[in-house]
Length: 358
Image 1 (cartoon, rainbow, N blue to C red):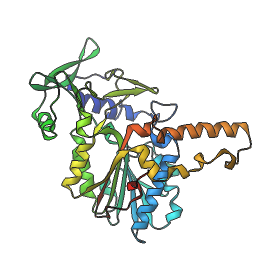
Image 2: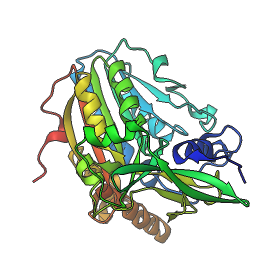
Image 3: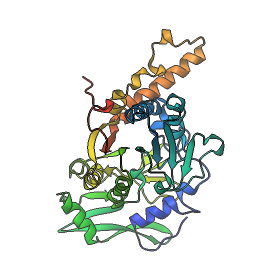
Image 4: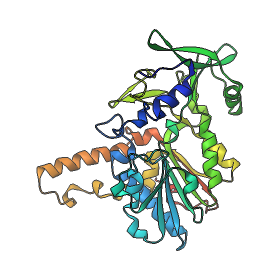
């Protein structure tokens, strides 16, 4: 077990996830996948990267023959950007692909072309319009756990007593009081909330970096008024994931489970407004994928057109189709996740993702 002093939960989470030796993301095994701790949209079905590929082609076409840069921030093992880049021959010579992550140890060296992997966004050239993607990046930022007690907000700390990790509360710093005031939010008595001040700060850095392009953020979260609703989310949104199971025991087995919370998309919109970006789209992931013609993927073709010749192939198609449907049907993760698209120095209307579906 990792040993800690009296730490704000935000610092505990930083160590539990990102400690270079004992942190969750320092483990040799990949935590993402159907046989791992959790599944992300790109691994759930290839239709996810297929739809993003449609957006890439549209972005490149609007660049009128110039070179475009496609960037995945927080790329992890690099599979998403590699899948999107796998269709790069359709725009040969017109697009460059980059994966950005501070830890690149899980990227397979044999599959890096035509993707360039770097550790910071500053290593990506700024000589071309940028399409910046991120998928479940912000919900992995270390966050503070907060609770209102009387007239004040308290911050949850973690301490060790007799070998057992437990909680205590201390007065929160003024920056958290200011955070809620700036959003016009007043927590109810006893209401918990999960906040990362890095959401807005990091996104501001991204928008400062972009001179011309789109920033597409895909994540779990809500606008501030919904995220901090006193009845709907009275106990916050913090959760732990291990072995495809979700738990509220955030202190269990540090370094062996993922920790996450829904993000405040209002922070990201606010950062964009300060740095010259306009919100072009904010809605459910399922709707976003449908606008990008995801249903034209071969997975959704009628069975009689699929060329299936064996029972095994038929069963595999059924499984693949069910996984894909989780991204576009009302009971799947496509309804739970949100997409924010911000534009800077580009056309503000006429994008495929802005079209009405009905």
